[in-house]
Image (cartoon, rainbow, N blue to C red; front, side, top):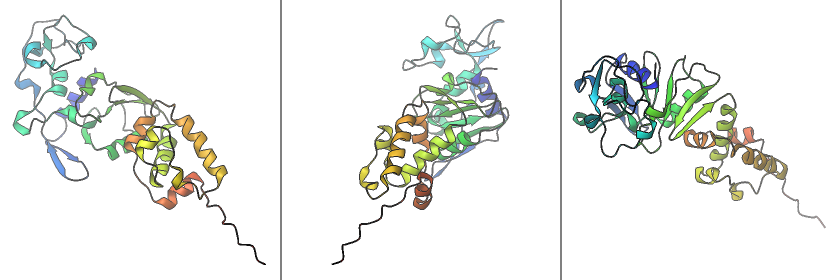
Length: 259
């Protein structure tokens, strides 16, 4: 089974419409059925994108627009058809405000497709579902990330397609995101974190040894491939919890000399 086949199968077994909560409003997601455009194809035909054998397909000229840019990744470039699974992940549903899967983060299991906001992505990264599954996190909402995704077959080490990066997530991700969230919650912006910087205006009143430890940790974490993903999904926690996690204690103020 290819990643797009798993995603398509998940959608087929999920009650419609699929709910999505972006934190400001709740949306019903209606994705188009690819079989509406598919035609029977000859035996031994393969999907030009994923290379899987197909019985139905959409002619390439009808399925892929002039803006499509993933030609180099095609597994069967000589084929003239896109299979229903791959077509599902890139198809626009013009009936419902030009809705398409590539505009959302999502998780697909064998029998369910979940449309996720970034905070839900965080939860899936910390506690992944039962394998097999495909996990995709979009930022730009403009790329066909499903075509680059990989199926995960275990929960301790699994893949997340984060924009153009296929990241391998392991148990070290949880302390990474906890560290990022703690800094974010005491006033270090996500932009500063992405640059590997600290805002010392928020740290000047704390014990220097503790701050130095944070600097070393940050320098190490910046080198990790999943650092950007941790920043993207990070949420704010209570400041007291953040200070406790970072082991930050305020420096004792110097007492005025008594004469």
